[in-house]
Image 1: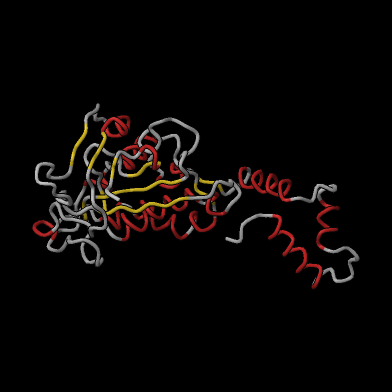
Image 2: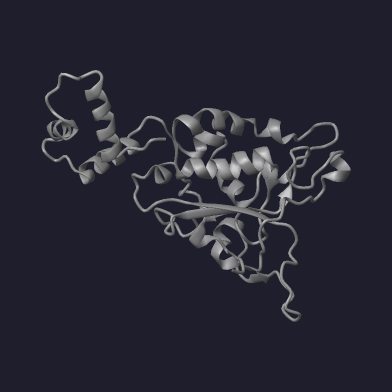
Length: 268
């Protein structure tokens, strides 16, 4: 995406002046001044861009993405639903590519042509019930691999014997979970878990876990901010679940959430 900004708009106008409207006596700044009533500055264009994004007819929610409703979406980001829990059988039942076929459709259509909003209405993703992720970042962590033959994790065939409680590729070291921070999403009232041998000073004993996060800019008009929901869809549903088969949450923590509400801690 090129993004919508004063600079990109000026470049497009300059291109039009050089080609289609070569007889125009105004330069790009002059055209912008005429179009914007003299308010040809970055703040004015930014405000117009944000308004255009917000009123776009290609804005989608995760209700549009899954078509399974609020409860399903809330449980999915907590680490539940059949997408996370079920494992394919030897006779082909519960095949992820079939059960979550909608994810592939969205990846090739809505996610590439429109704006997907962050699911700030979901307690699992936003337990603090605020309007935005305050740290401008979110991430997901998975503890199980449910799909064979994708060169990710150690789930294998035959499913009934070689894909029971299998692990994703390990890329993180989990040391602590604060259950209070995710109680709304995980239904765990409180407490904490320590993943380490405190007496002997040993870490990384929790088993394999895979995490992936992403961040966005302060400006609501920055493309990386506009498409942050698209990034969440790609990270959580398409790249890790649908493509790799990575599923389920760390006990007591939501699977995906705003960074400030995630209850996991890692050593530096």
